[in-house]
Amino acid sequence: MTRSGAVATVTLNRPDRRNALDPMLLDALAERFTDLAGDRGVRAIVVRGAGSAFCAGADLDHMAASAELSPEDNVRDAERMAAAFEAVDACPKAVVARVHGYAFGGGAGLAACADVAIADAGTVFAFSEVRLGLLPATISPYVVRAIGPRWTRALFTSGRRFDAAEALHVGLVHEVAATERLDERVHDAVEAFLAAGPEAVAACKRLVRDAAGSPGLDDLPERIALARTGEEGREGVRAFLERRSPSWSAGS
Image (cartoon, rainbow, N blue to C red; front, side, top):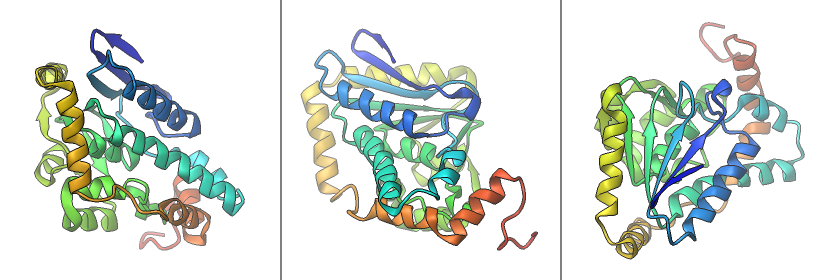
């Protein structure tokens, strides 16, 4: 994390794994946003990814290993992910997501949690969990709130990739910028927040969360844990890691 005046930048820093979310990264993300939420000197937070991608979603090596955990440990592992996303979404500071490269699964979910998400024109998005026999359960409340149930259903159930223009069309991001202007547009978004009253920003965020209803469902960790440990989830993750089609694929 870096600071410049009232602006903090939180960088997902596993570039060799396209910033895939493993337990250490999730814990760090939750800790950083929790700390920043209570820091009166911070008014805006930029979340970004190091290297070639914003975030490629959950770390599938960890997901494969988690299938062998006990049901209780698997639920606790899923709760860790839920806590990280809730820390970002509930943060009273203005949050701007700088999205580039790939935003799959949890990466697209992080974009949905931001107050403003600005994507590089070449960014590729996907909610690809279903193609691995898994569920995007943890991020579902935030994505539904961002793009509505109709588009969420279409993208969750197909798992297909889509480009930044479509992400803008459905409401997952607020702006698409050319690569050479991405940082400029992120800066402009931050400056707009700095022109607003910080207490009013926090109150507006609470207002929208309250008006939209509860941000989550109580049993989301159990749902994702069940998918991870089920036969289909195990097969889907193994197939991806082994670079083959899963057993249910038409091409297998």
